[in-house]
Amino acid sequence: MKVKIKILLLLTISTLTIFILILNILVNTHKIYNYEVNRINTKQKVVMLTFDDGPEASADNAILDILEKEKVSGMFFQIGRNIDQRLYNKDPNIANKYLALQRRILTGPSHSWIGSHTYSHLNYLSRQKLAVQELNHTYKLLQKIYQNILKITITPELVPTRFAYLQYFNGMDYIGQKTNNKYFIRGYLGTDYNEKRAGKNKILHEYLSHLHPGQIFVCHTRNYAKIWLPELIRILKNKGYQFASFNPNSPHYYQKYGKLVD
Image 1 (cartoon, rainbow, N blue to C red):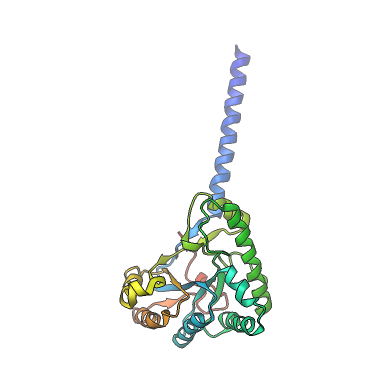
Image 2 (tube, rainbow, N blue to C red; image 1 turned 90 degrees about the vertical axis):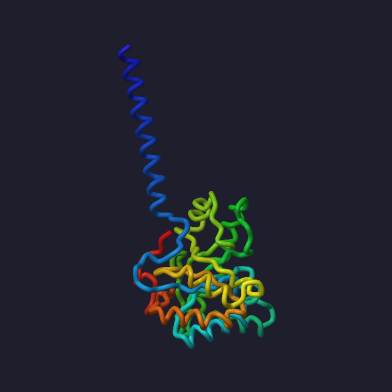
Protein backbone atom coordinates (compact mmCIF):
# COMPACT_ATOMS: atom_id res chain seq x y z
CA MET A 1 0.00 0.00 0.00
CA LYS A 2 2.80 2.37 0.93
CA VAL A 3 4.55 1.57 -2.37
CA LYS A 4 1.41 2.46 -4.34
CA ILE A 5 1.09 5.75 -2.48
CA LYS A 6 4.73 6.58 -3.20
CA ILE A 7 4.25 5.78 -6.90
CA LEU A 8 1.12 7.93 -7.08
CA LEU A 9 2.94 10.75 -5.29
CA LEU A 10 5.87 10.54 -7.70
CA LEU A 11 3.53 10.53 -10.71
CA THR A 12 1.67 13.55 -9.33
CA ILE A 13 4.91 15.46 -8.74
CA SER A 14 6.22 14.52 -12.20
CA THR A 15 2.98 15.61 -13.87
CA LEU A 16 2.97 18.90 -11.96
CA THR A 17 6.62 19.53 -12.87
CA ILE A 18 5.96 18.94 -16.59
CA PHE A 19 2.92 21.23 -16.44
CA ILE A 20 4.96 24.02 -14.82
CA LEU A 21 7.69 23.63 -17.47
CA ILE A 22 5.17 23.82 -20.32
CA LEU A 23 3.49 26.83 -18.72
CA ASN A 24 6.87 28.53 -18.31
CA ILE A 25 7.68 27.96 -21.98
CA LEU A 26 4.34 29.41 -23.04
CA VAL A 27 4.75 32.45 -20.81
CA ASN A 28 8.29 33.10 -22.03
CA THR A 29 7.20 32.70 -25.64
CA HIS A 30 4.45 35.25 -25.08
CA LYS A 31 7.04 37.62 -23.61
CA ILE A 32 9.21 37.22 -26.70
CA TYR A 33 6.43 37.25 -29.29
CA ASN A 34 3.79 39.96 -28.85
CA TYR A 35 2.42 39.18 -32.34
CA GLU A 36 0.82 42.60 -32.78
CA VAL A 37 1.83 46.12 -31.87
CA ASN A 38 -0.35 49.19 -32.29
CA ARG A 39 1.61 52.10 -30.86
CA ILE A 40 4.83 53.45 -29.42
CA ASN A 41 4.80 53.28 -25.64
CA THR A 42 5.41 56.95 -24.85
CA LYS A 43 3.84 60.00 -23.28
CA GLN A 44 5.67 62.29 -25.67
CA LYS A 45 3.75 63.89 -28.50
CA VAL A 46 4.87 61.70 -31.38
CA VAL A 47 3.06 59.77 -34.11
CA MET A 48 4.08 57.54 -36.99
CA LEU A 49 2.79 57.89 -40.56
CA THR A 50 2.69 54.61 -42.50
CA PHE A 51 1.62 53.97 -46.09
CA ASP A 52 0.45 50.56 -47.35
CA ASP A 53 0.13 48.83 -50.74
CA GLY A 54 3.02 50.29 -52.75
CA PRO A 55 5.32 50.66 -54.40
CA GLU A 56 3.47 52.87 -56.87
CA ALA A 57 5.72 55.50 -58.39
CA SER A 58 3.24 58.32 -58.95
CA ALA A 59 1.53 58.15 -55.54
CA ASP A 60 4.66 57.36 -53.53
CA ASN A 61 6.65 60.19 -55.11
CA ALA A 62 3.78 62.61 -54.41
CA ILE A 63 3.74 61.47 -50.78
CA LEU A 64 7.52 61.85 -50.55
CA ASP A 65 7.24 65.38 -51.97
CA ILE A 66 4.98 66.23 -49.03
CA LEU A 67 7.09 64.44 -46.41
CA GLU A 68 10.27 66.13 -47.62
CA LYS A 69 8.66 69.55 -47.76
CA GLU A 70 7.30 69.17 -44.23
CA LYS A 71 10.52 67.50 -43.00
CA VAL A 72 8.76 64.44 -41.60
CA SER A 73 9.22 60.68 -42.08
CA GLY A 74 7.01 57.92 -43.41
CA MET A 75 7.01 54.12 -43.34
CA PHE A 76 6.15 52.41 -46.64
CA PHE A 77 4.77 48.88 -46.23
CA GLN A 78 5.13 47.41 -49.71
CA ILE A 79 3.49 44.39 -51.34
CA GLY A 80 6.02 41.82 -52.56
CA ARG A 81 4.18 41.15 -55.80
CA ASN A 82 4.31 44.86 -56.66
CA ILE A 83 8.06 44.88 -55.99
CA ASP A 84 8.53 41.85 -58.24
CA GLN A 85 6.45 43.27 -61.08
CA ARG A 86 7.83 46.81 -60.96
CA LEU A 87 11.32 46.87 -59.53
CA TYR A 88 12.27 43.73 -61.47
CA ASN A 89 10.30 44.56 -64.59
CA LYS A 90 11.85 43.48 -67.91
CA ASP A 91 11.42 47.03 -69.18
CA PRO A 92 14.54 48.84 -67.91
CA ASN A 93 12.70 52.18 -67.83
CA ILE A 94 10.13 50.81 -65.38
CA ALA A 95 12.74 48.97 -63.31
CA ASN A 96 14.95 52.07 -63.08
CA LYS A 97 11.98 54.25 -62.11
CA TYR A 98 11.19 51.97 -59.18
CA LEU A 99 14.81 51.60 -58.16
CA ALA A 100 14.97 55.41 -58.00
CA LEU A 101 11.81 55.42 -55.87
CA GLN A 102 13.21 52.89 -53.39
CA ARG A 103 16.47 54.81 -53.23
CA ARG A 104 14.57 58.04 -52.56
CA ILE A 105 12.61 56.44 -49.72
CA LEU A 106 15.68 54.98 -48.02
CA THR A 107 18.27 57.69 -48.61
CA GLY A 108 16.22 60.85 -49.14
CA PRO A 109 15.83 63.73 -46.67
CA SER A 110 12.58 62.36 -45.21
CA HIS A 111 14.49 59.54 -43.43
CA SER A 112 11.73 57.13 -44.43
CA TRP A 113 11.83 53.32 -44.46
CA ILE A 114 10.39 50.28 -46.26
CA GLY A 115 8.65 47.27 -44.71
CA SER A 116 6.76 44.17 -45.82
CA HIS A 117 3.03 44.08 -46.50
CA THR A 118 2.94 40.38 -47.49
CA TYR A 119 3.38 39.21 -51.07
CA SER A 120 -0.15 38.83 -52.45
CA HIS A 121 -2.23 40.86 -49.96
CA LEU A 122 -4.53 37.93 -49.22
CA ASN A 123 -6.67 36.78 -46.32
CA TYR A 124 -4.35 34.28 -44.60
CA LEU A 125 -6.74 33.03 -41.91
CA SER A 126 -6.74 29.44 -43.20
CA ARG A 127 -3.55 29.79 -45.25
CA GLN A 128 -0.87 29.97 -42.58
CA LYS A 129 1.74 27.95 -44.48
CA LEU A 130 1.17 30.16 -47.52
CA ALA A 131 1.60 33.22 -45.29
CA VAL A 132 4.96 31.90 -44.10
CA GLN A 133 6.09 31.25 -47.69
CA GLU A 134 4.97 34.68 -48.87
CA LEU A 135 6.47 36.58 -45.94
CA ASN A 136 9.80 34.82 -46.36
CA HIS A 137 9.80 35.53 -50.09
CA THR A 138 8.95 39.20 -49.60
CA TYR A 139 11.64 39.42 -46.94
CA LYS A 140 14.20 38.15 -49.45
CA LEU A 141 13.08 40.84 -51.92
CA LEU A 142 13.55 43.49 -49.24
CA GLN A 143 16.95 42.04 -48.29
CA LYS A 144 18.09 42.61 -51.89
CA ILE A 145 16.79 46.19 -51.85
CA TYR A 146 18.51 47.10 -48.58
CA GLN A 147 21.72 45.34 -49.58
CA ASN A 148 21.74 47.06 -52.97
CA ILE A 149 20.94 50.57 -51.73
CA LEU A 150 22.24 50.75 -48.14
CA LYS A 151 24.71 47.85 -48.14
CA ILE A 152 23.22 46.47 -44.92
CA THR A 153 21.90 43.13 -43.73
CA ILE A 154 18.40 43.45 -42.36
CA THR A 155 16.43 41.70 -39.61
CA PRO A 156 12.64 41.41 -39.19
CA GLU A 157 12.87 43.87 -36.28
CA LEU A 158 14.74 46.43 -38.37
CA VAL A 159 12.42 45.94 -41.34
CA PRO A 160 9.02 44.96 -39.89
CA THR A 161 5.90 43.45 -41.44
CA ARG A 162 2.28 44.54 -41.56
CA PHE A 163 -0.29 41.92 -42.52
CA ALA A 164 -2.80 42.68 -45.26
CA TYR A 165 -6.05 44.08 -43.81
CA LEU A 166 -4.32 44.25 -40.38
CA GLN A 167 -5.21 40.58 -39.93
CA TYR A 168 -4.86 39.01 -36.51
CA PHE A 169 -5.96 35.44 -35.83
CA ASN A 170 -5.08 32.21 -34.03
CA GLY A 171 -1.96 30.92 -35.70
CA MET A 172 -0.04 34.19 -35.66
CA ASP A 173 2.37 32.52 -33.22
CA TYR A 174 3.15 29.86 -35.83
CA ILE A 175 3.65 32.48 -38.56
CA GLY A 176 5.71 34.72 -36.32
CA GLN A 177 8.07 31.98 -35.24
CA LYS A 178 8.47 30.52 -38.74
CA THR A 179 9.37 33.97 -40.13
CA ASN A 180 11.32 35.24 -37.08
CA ASN A 181 8.86 38.10 -36.63
CA LYS A 182 8.42 38.93 -32.94
CA TYR A 183 5.50 41.19 -33.83
CA PHE A 184 3.43 42.54 -36.71
CA ILE A 185 2.70 46.25 -37.05
CA ARG A 186 -0.89 47.39 -36.79
CA GLY A 187 -2.17 50.84 -35.81
CA TYR A 188 -5.24 52.97 -36.49
CA LEU A 189 -6.81 52.33 -39.91
CA GLY A 190 -8.81 55.21 -41.41
CA THR A 191 -10.65 55.22 -44.74
CA ASP A 192 -8.16 57.09 -46.91
CA TYR A 193 -8.13 54.00 -49.18
CA ASN A 194 -11.73 54.81 -50.17
CA GLU A 195 -11.41 58.51 -50.95
CA LYS A 196 -14.47 58.71 -53.19
CA ARG A 197 -16.75 57.73 -50.32
CA ALA A 198 -14.81 59.29 -47.47
CA GLY A 199 -13.49 62.59 -48.85
CA LYS A 200 -10.89 64.86 -47.29
CA ASN A 201 -12.82 66.04 -44.22
CA LYS A 202 -13.83 62.55 -43.07
CA ILE A 203 -10.30 61.24 -43.54
CA LEU A 204 -8.87 64.07 -41.44
CA HIS A 205 -11.57 63.68 -38.78
CA GLU A 206 -10.93 59.95 -38.44
CA TYR A 207 -7.20 60.31 -37.90
CA LEU A 208 -7.45 63.33 -35.60
CA SER A 209 -10.19 61.78 -33.47
CA HIS A 210 -7.84 58.85 -32.79
CA LEU A 211 -4.81 61.00 -32.02
CA HIS A 212 -2.76 60.20 -28.92
CA PRO A 213 0.97 60.02 -28.09
CA GLY A 214 2.61 57.08 -29.84
CA GLN A 215 -0.20 56.53 -32.35
CA ILE A 216 0.62 54.67 -35.57
CA PHE A 217 -1.56 55.92 -38.44
CA VAL A 218 -2.30 53.39 -41.18
CA CYS A 219 -2.51 55.27 -44.48
CA HIS A 220 -2.22 54.15 -48.10
CA THR A 221 -0.16 54.76 -51.20
CA ARG A 222 -2.75 56.70 -53.18
CA ASN A 223 -2.58 59.90 -55.19
CA TYR A 224 -5.43 61.32 -53.09
CA ALA A 225 -2.97 61.63 -50.21
CA LYS A 226 -1.82 64.96 -51.64
CA ILE A 227 -5.33 66.31 -50.92
CA TRP A 228 -5.40 65.57 -47.18
CA LEU A 229 -1.88 64.65 -46.01
CA PRO A 230 -0.35 68.18 -45.97
CA GLU A 231 -3.19 69.46 -43.79
CA LEU A 232 -2.96 66.50 -41.40
CA ILE A 233 0.77 67.07 -40.94
CA ARG A 234 0.32 70.80 -40.34
CA ILE A 235 -2.46 70.21 -37.78
CA LEU A 236 -0.31 67.65 -35.94
CA LYS A 237 2.65 70.03 -35.93
CA ASN A 238 0.47 72.81 -34.52
CA LYS A 239 -0.53 70.43 -31.74
CA GLY A 240 3.14 69.90 -30.95
CA TYR A 241 3.57 66.46 -32.47
CA GLN A 242 6.73 65.01 -33.96
CA PHE A 243 6.95 62.17 -36.47
CA ALA A 244 8.78 58.95 -35.60
CA SER A 245 10.54 56.75 -38.11
CA PHE A 246 11.63 53.11 -38.37
CA ASN A 247 14.82 54.38 -39.98
CA PRO A 248 17.55 53.98 -37.32
CA ASN A 249 19.50 56.84 -38.92
CA SER A 250 16.62 59.27 -38.44
CA PRO A 251 16.86 61.89 -35.67
CA HIS A 252 13.34 60.72 -34.79
CA TYR A 253 14.00 56.97 -34.67
CA TYR A 254 11.02 55.51 -32.80
CA GLN A 255 13.13 53.76 -30.16
CA LYS A 256 14.17 57.19 -28.85
CA TYR A 257 10.56 57.58 -27.69
CA GLY A 258 9.70 54.09 -26.47
CA LYS A 259 9.07 50.47 -27.38
CA LEU A 260 6.35 49.16 -29.67
CA VAL A 261 3.44 47.75 -27.66
CA ASP A 262 -0.04 46.35 -28.28
